[in-house]
Length: 249
Image 1 (cartoon, rainbow, N blue to C red):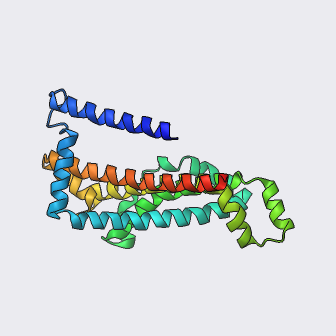
Image 2: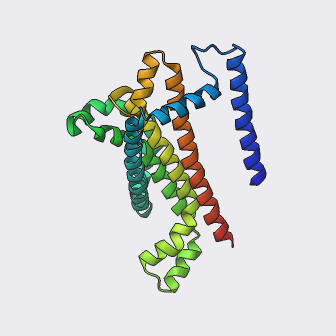
Image 3: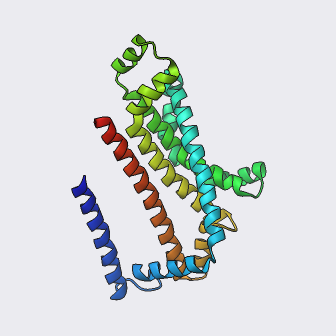
């Protein structure tokens, strides 16, 4: 694992250095992209100025609500579908084609229902993330060895203790995969919704900078999002590895 981590780190560093060189040497024009070092410098200046703090907190709040709702809702729905094989077989084709649905086409309807506020944006983030959690929850529950369930019954464990002691630990790898996908999709849904439908937030700020040819601000905010999502996913990855190592022991 350490070797794979080092290889991934070197690949990322090499890619960043390559971009830096291509931008500095003029292969990539400044109207197209600025060097990564300038992105980082501009991001630091924006964070110091506090100019975009309100937009950042608004977006992070929307993503947090969408993410938590997607994880909790996806786990509950996935567990219910797993316990109802007929319903699952009926819904499986819809889950397989779910991400082909153009969610943003429903935004006018969501505005009519919820009004011009954060609710439609959060709902779009939720819709992006929930199915990834549903699918991985069902996959994780599918992989629980039947012998463990039988052992729990023989030892007189109730449904709650069986879920806590047997099902959740056994399904943990797939559940963590669903959580990591849910956070990524929630960010995509919320920021994309803000990009085309909002008057505030990071998505709106990036769109505003793009429309005004402010590449430094646009790429700085994009770097902030990429860095933040990477840190969050790395946190869940480390947490997952620790749990798996503890299970191995």
